[in-house]
Image (cartoon, rainbow, N blue to C red; front, side, top):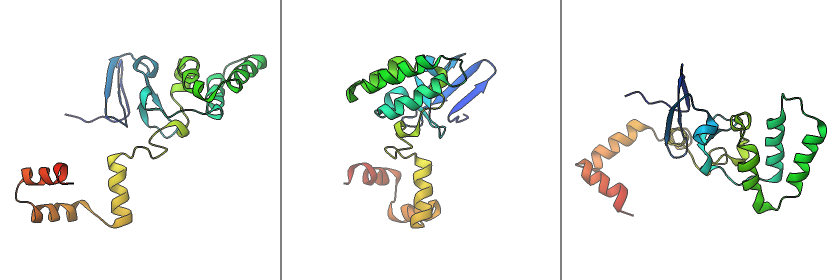
Length: 165
């Protein structure tokens, strides 16, 4: 079986894998909006539910993205900014969902400040491994040798990993 990460397009079908939880979204002719996923500026694909709380500054950046490339009267943009300025902090997430995430243009470039991976709330396994190898000089072959030496069976290893705290 072929493992696909991030966005994959094959003529008329699309597949998205959430980089936080691993959920796979696969549907015919679907968009980020249809599947309730977003892509941050670092290309992480994330389920809507994993996004961090936005600030007013973030909402304004997303609003700029929403209007970019469109011919919009300045008063429309000013009205949107005024709406954002008048929000209470607890209303920012709702505003983002109801006003901004309705646009695929916004969904494809979410600011890193609300991406849990960019903010190190979640560290992907491959990056975690790379960090350990680089910073602590811990390499997979060394770990494999140590595990083989220390454990006589997979069940013993499994119990040690998950039950011995």
